[in-house]
Amino acid sequence: MDCIFCQIVAGKIPADILYQDEEVIAFRDINPLAPVHLLVIPRKHIPSPVQLSEAESSLMGKMVNTANQLAKKEDIAESGYRLVINCGQQGGQGVPHLHMHLLGGRQLSATLG
Amino acid sequence: MDCIFCQIVAGKIPADILYQDEEVIAFRDINPLAPVHLLVIPRKHIPSPVQLSEAESSLMGKMVNTANQLAKKEDIAESGYRLVINCGQQGGQGVPHLHMHLLGGRQLSATLG
Image (cartoon, rainbow over all chains, first blue to last red; front, side):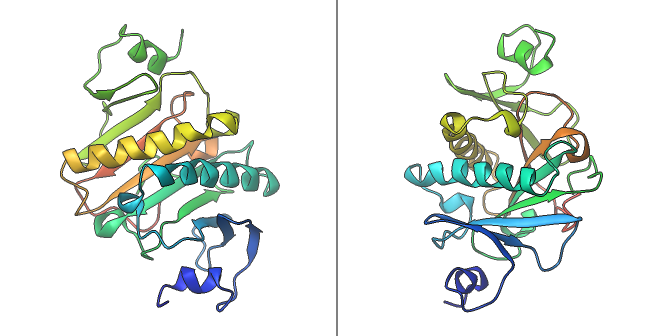
């Protein structure tokens, strides 16, 4: 229960939650890198995509669908957006709980970081 | 059939294909932004995640699983990697055929582009 995202899931740390269901939660990143910067995470503590079992992989579809719906709500579906999953140290993964970044509202660079 | 990725799928344009099955193909990006830079795409021409139907969302799980397997093969699963899906103009989507970038082999920036 040291995981900050598990504590958000459990309601022990406040977050600006935009969507939740039995599988995923979406909330605003507290250190936004773009005008729209949301995180979509599974409720379940999966450390990274590497630990995602094949049986759990449908979660990824759910996470992408959730991000797409939120992009429409945030009015960036037309202008464009980026979905990013960082994995491990060189990937720049900040929190060891699988999460998908949804970034938009500005021109994102072609370098991909 | 103007789509360059559809032409790779059809074998009409050569690519360094690392994996393929009935649903997805993975190949090296011809303009690599990192020591390892692969693309995982569905065979089917889906322009962007916005056009992904809920029924097709299992494809995303398949694409992530494929990327994870390739990260292991390319020996970047331990060091870390980044998965990126660009959508639309501000997202920096270069080719209008859904694709997932797999980047690794160097420290990726925390800015996410």
